[in-house]
Image 1 (cartoon, rainbow over the protein chains, first blue to last red):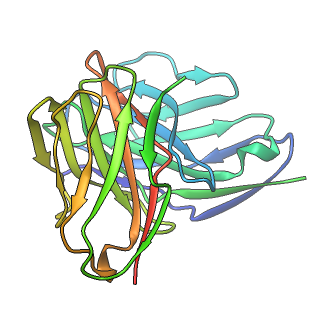
Image 2 (cartoon, rainbow over the protein chains, first blue to last red):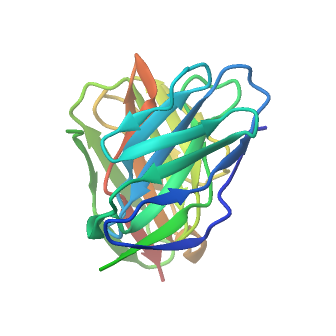
Length: 115
Length: 113
């Protein structure tokens, strides 16, 4: 079964600095993808970034980038130039094995950006 | 911009009541999902649908039921609410050609007293 581990329950970062949120995973699927979602205090889940296991280059979306290290089974999210609005819960997710469309989520990391 | 809506946003209700949480999306997505999330915890899939008249249970057992009579609508029903049902319920949808890019609604925070 798939397993996602986020070992940082809470993180603090100074505004304008970069921060890395850790995510490790365990899967037996030969092909898979890794997802990151952001959940502000209002509760909605916002899709941030995705990378497939066979993608050659690390994915980037604006200030978000994925530090994907397949051998270590890690897919860390890097947020550059943190903003106060980045304060939120961040979830890493991986597809459920055998499923074409469902995800299993990690326990999340609460990021707080300090002014 | 994703357009997926959930109502109500907040609901406080007494034990034994029947409730329906509404979820609608205007993106024409085939796939829709319901997740349950306790405060500060990970999401757990409780129901999903691949299209009209298609519903399946997710990896977390739930006493709730769902229906998919129309593509855009995926309501979740609890026949008899209990305090153990207190949680946040998140609805999501995804397109056929991008199944993992799930768009989430704002969620419904349910409290059963």
